[in-house]
Image 1: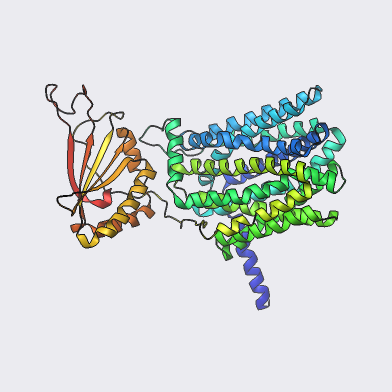
Image 2: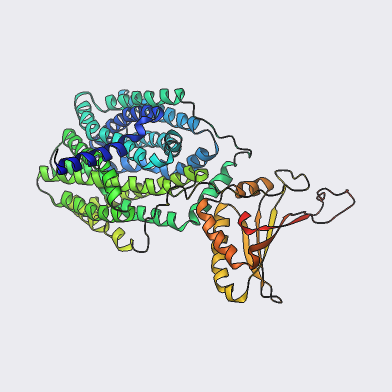
Length: 563
C-alpha cells in the first residue's frame, strides 16, 4: 500500500470512528432507528401539508404559514419544556410530546378523509403537531448526555442529523408519490404511524436517575433560572444572536420551496418532492462531513463559511432559470442548513452545565424556531409583494449580515470538563435547624484588599458577581468601607434555604479560575463569611428561647474558594 493510500485509509478510519462511535451504545442506536422512522413520517407530513395548502389557498403567504405554524410552538413551549426536562423525568416528557403529535396527526387525517379540511384547520392541527415536537425536543436533546459519554455528544448530535436528513433526502420524494397517488390524507396517516416506534422505545428505556437531595425547582422558578443563566452568559448570548442572524434569511428556502416548484419551475407535487429531496441529500452530506470540518476549523470559522455559502445558495435559487441548477442550489442549501443548526446546537450543549442543559437547549430552540417562523412569514409577505425571485435574492444578501458581526459575536465552545460541577470544600452545617422554606438567606463576605490591588479587585469581584447571579444569587452588591478603604463587603441573597443549597451546587470547574484570581488579591487569601437568615417581625428566632428576639448569624473563617 502506498503512503498516500495509507493516509487515505487512516483518514477514513478516523472519520468512521468519530462518526459511528455513538452507535456502540445500545440505547442511542435504538433511539436513532426509531427517530429515523419518525423523521420519515414528518417529511411525508410536510409534503402533504405544504402541497395541500398550495392547492386550497395558493397564495405565497398562505403556503409559507404552514412552516410558521410548525415552528411557532417551539417559540411558545420550548422554555417550559426545557425547564421540565431539567427538573422532571425526561422520559415521561418525551412520551407526552410524542403522543400529542400522534393524536394531532391522526386527527388531521380524519378531518381530511371527512372532507372538512380548510386552511385554518390545516394550520391549527399542524400547530398541534408542532406542539408535540416542542414538548419532546428539549428533553430529547438533553437526554443525549444520558445515552452517550460527554465526549461523544458532538458526534451523537451529528449522527441524529444524519438520520433526520437521510429521511429528508428520501422522505419528500416518497411523500410526493404518496400525495400524488393517494392524496394528503395518506401522508398524514403514515406520519401518525411513524410515531409508534419511538413511543415503544421510550416505553422500553429505563435511564439511570441521579437522586438529588434537593426537591425539584418549581416550574416558574426553573424557567426564571434558565432565563437568568443565559442572560448572564455572554458566550451563550453571542451564539444565540448569531443564530438569529443566520436563521431569518435562510428560512426563505424552506418557506418558499413549494412556490419555487410551482411558479419558477412550473412543476407539481413531484417537483416539490424532488427539490425537498435534494435539500435532504445536501443536509445529509453536510452532516456526514461535519466530523471532518469540525476537526479542521473552529465553530466560529465554520459558521462564517456557512453564512457565505447560504448567500450563494439562495441567490442561485432565486435567479436560476434551469431546473438542474435549482436542484443543485437546494443541495447546497440543505448542507449549510444542517451544518449551521448543528453547529449552534453543539455549541450550546457543550457550553451548558448539566443542571441547566435542557433549558439552554430550549432557549436555543425557542430563538431558532421563532426566527424560522418570523423569517418564513416575512419572506412569504415579501414574495407576495415583490416576487419570489426578488425575495430569495434579498434573503441571500441578508445572510451576509452574520459575517459582519462575527468579530463582536464569536461562537466559542467551552473546553471538555470545564463545565463539570466544582467540588467544594466542606462547609460546616448550620448550628440550628433551618426549614427548607426559611429565608431569605443572606451571605456577607468581608475582604481586605491592599490599595495597589483595588482596581483589579473591582474587575474580578464584578465577574464573580456575574457568576453568582447567573447561578441564582439575588440582590448582589459589593461595597467599600469609607473609613477603612482596605475593607470591602460583598452581599447577596437566596430566597430560601433550599435555594441557597441549589446555588452552592451550581458553580463549575471553569468558575474556579475566577475565584483563584480573587484569592490572589485578598490579604492572606482569607475572607470572613457570614450566613444569616432574615427574621421578619413576628418570626421565631432560630435556636433561641421564645422570649429572646435577635437576628441569628454564623461567622466562619475559611478560604474564599469555598464561595
